[in-house]
Length: 330
Ligand SMILES: NC(=O)c1ccc[n+]([C@@H]2O[C@H](COP(=O)([O-])OP(=O)(O)OC[C@H]3O[C@@H](n4cnc5c(N)ncnc54)[C@H](O)[C@@H]3O)[C@@H](O)[C@H]2O)c1
Image (cartoon, rainbow, N blue to C red; front, side):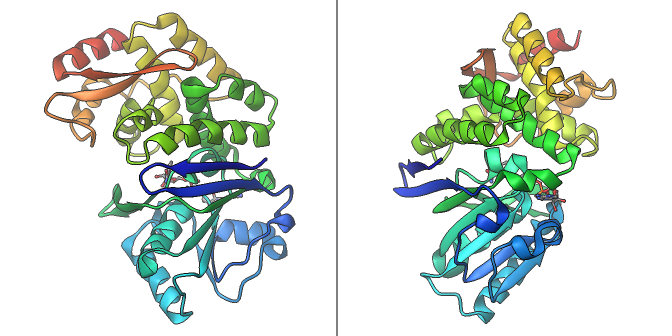
């Protein structure tokens, strides 16, 4: 599989390639940034590099302190404008590593090798880099697509079921937005085909709208409710699980109850939980919606799925939004 996406505004391209096994990953890094779990699990099979930084995966790696540590290393090893940074890890290590690469000398060459399903199907492609500030997610960041992404499904063999489920939820979201066949690939556990199909959907959307002023918003399907559920549960419910709960809610807000039922059934077959815990109340949701970053004076754009590959952007003012949510929570 070889795919290439060119992004309109920056006129930069991302080439997506594959490696059948970890030892076949062919890269020549000047600086290698690695997730510690990946380093422990794959040791000598990983590409070698004289200069390496190992980060502990998780939100704790998305901080200004870690960013500073990466810049210091880049300075110490004399990383030049034409040098290449290779990041091997999940979405957190990739987000921070890519941020550092995008800002060092105003941007060096970047290869991302995603090692979680979520990062393979979503976080690695599309150029968003970020760190969290004062506990708030993704407050500082850049838009800097990697020139190369390498997908190696062998990494999924050591991923926990919980992390796999997070990726499955984002893959299901992508199936609803743009390619129903992704569900079949997931059911067959054909992860390479599922990842390829997800990247094709995301890549074609992002190539048109890197800055998220139009079509890219579709990728937020399930996220408005999902973010509220994560926050109400004090982040006990993972991001992927919360998004999976949010997708049928969005379908019901559009009056598409049959499709919402179908989505819950398909999710269940993939062992993705979509039932919303009773602790997540409507008043809790309405309260947390106030913090939604996408709110404007006119209201909020919701992504409403009407069927497979048929998602629409709908601007709802706060009273209509409340009315629709009340019907769902009845
Ligand atoms: N940039 C984007 O467009 C974008 C899109 C979606 C999500 N994100 C970000 O991605 C992050 C979540 O990424 P994630 O779900 O990959 O989580 P993660 O990076 O925290 O990884 C999850 C856990 O799995 C471990 N791990 C990674 N690869 C492994 C492997 N192959 N085997 C065993 N363990 C492994 C990590 O050490 C970590 O403990 C969030 O911070 C989110 O904001 C970014």
